[in-house]
Image (cartoon, rainbow, N blue to C red):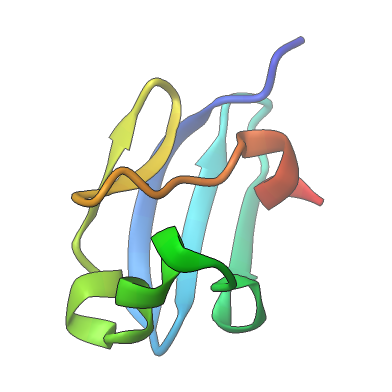
Length: 73
């Protein structure tokens, strides 16, 4: 089974609650994962909380994303 994110909700700071297609819900904290040029803008919390689900994972307006498998781990 390929992991997909069915729903995502911003919680606080750099935390997002993710609902996966396997029925599990996880709270992920991405504060220490925002490394590299594409993730630098996400350190601004107003930018970080503005994401959507695109191609079965979360994606920000600048194109930054994380693979569902990475978020699951």
